[in-house]
Length: 448
Image 1 (cartoon, rainbow, N blue to C red):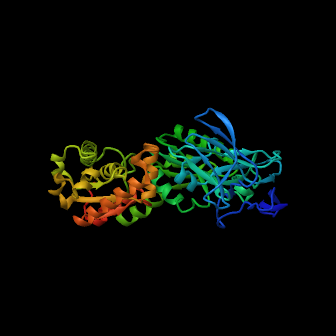
Image 2 (spheres, helix red, strand yellow):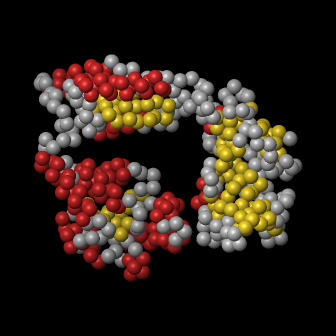
Image 3 (cartoon, rainbow, N blue to C red):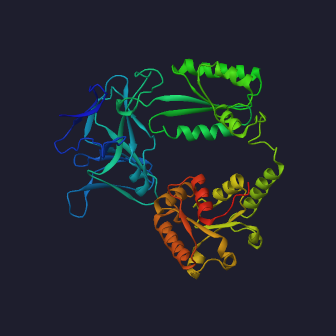
């Protein structure tokens, strides 16, 4: 019988689920804001088709009971692919498709993946939905009856149907607005990008931005070319683009102002009040923010960057006395990118050195670092996130295993406490936030 389904804003059903047996769990969302509907394995009736890699053929396997309980399961060997039944079928309206994805927790904990993700169910498919799952781990993995293994999402195809600048959203809900954003500058465009991103970050949950950078728009001819690009985007989107600009020259700015976009020029906005306050005109010179007009500052930045690159991962420890800061931590906690950002953005001379199992067995920080204890700062991270990062680098290795990661993090924390090394959890922080926090907590003064 039908169990209801995904709905459009006007209440019309987009997908209607129909159970094929009395004990079927109808697809449902875990929370009000879940993106997908949970799909469960239904193993109580029939067999599961499995492509068994070691045999190089398809076998039909009947689920077996687990430990005398009535919760049956199938076991997938490494490399196996299985068509797992869900026990329901669905009716989709024309113009919609069903998409099947594996649950992130299943992918993370068991290494089970949808190899053709997202799997697609066409609107005219009349039969039971199956989830194609592959065991990408190095160990056998079980799929149990009633286990939530996938997520189903309904997506509309074709042109957007909610007006200009919007796209059809998952579940047929009111779509997320899309806006094209141009960052226009008479120099590199870096300032316009940074300031623009800061403003856009306040709307990212409700608006999807597509950023386009137009650098070195320094002449009327280039400005006219930029206007053509902006106007084409406005015509294609059906809504005017947003134009963030850092333009020193008034003639160029006035040409950009004739475009079909909303112009927000940061220099125009702030230079006027600043000129009035200082009682003088600005230089109106292009390229001051990111050029080489201050050679000493530029050279300090390059020298600090070279130092970070040359003293990465414990290299040249005998030169650590030149460092303003020495970052330590287990592998893949963000030490190298943080050192580089501190050098480029602040001119800080940063080195870094890893902690490894030899250090944990000796129960001490490397002796070569003890002379610089006042410069040490540690980075840490949650075990789940670190295992995910390492899995991308060395899949299914001991190095990437959750057990190994948990051991290393616990041992590192013990050493931080023993040697009174301040540390920062980087799990939810960007490089910019990490770097700013380090400067704030250490009291280091930026050199540029």
